[in-house]
Image 1 (cartoon, protein in one colour):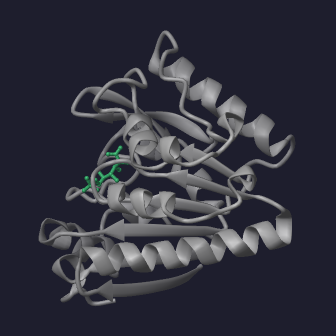
Image 2 (cartoon, helix red, strand yellow):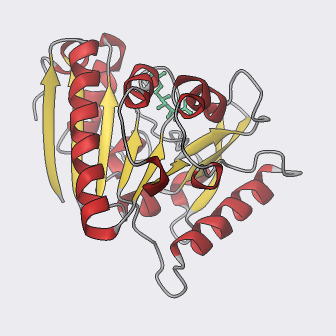
Length: 240
Ligand code: 6PG
């Protein structure tokens, strides 16, 4: 794993740097493999980034969008990551519907939704035999409890190592989430973290020794590239 940490002065420059990095990886992937596969995070931090991506002129037919985690709510629910992403980005560009791969949250239960998403991913990557297919890029956020995707501290989801997708749990609310081994199979992982409220969690995630199950973002150690893009509010005093 090669890890890069960049601290940007503020959120607009953080978003601009994230956009630049994503576009660079997109160009490389399409040049080398004819397509770009990206898994998105939810929450509030990435929204301006998604709006900025929508303003780019890109080969949308070569771009495939997944979600690294999703709340177990219908796609028109205000908490839906898919809804946020469609409004900020996907509804504003002519990306083929077949290139958008939402989590099937209308399934009867979260376990079924996770299993169906995993099956879809395996079929998309035609990954029979390959245990963990490699996305070009997984974009992650980090909560102030050091969770990422929907891998929350001290939850069963952190123990799942033989699946691509599992059921996370936030305060009793089910979430659908990539597992950390699947995230770690990506060619690149970018954390986008902003705000002073994330400082304590970042200190634990970057500490030489700490409990991975207490600070789940510590589990993200991809064999490819790991990027931490932080604003100064979150990362100006981080020892890295
Ligand atoms: C989600 C996200 C989650 C998010 C963090 C940070 O579904 O909420 O995937 O993991 O990235 O909670 O959220 P903020 O960007 O809102 O701080």
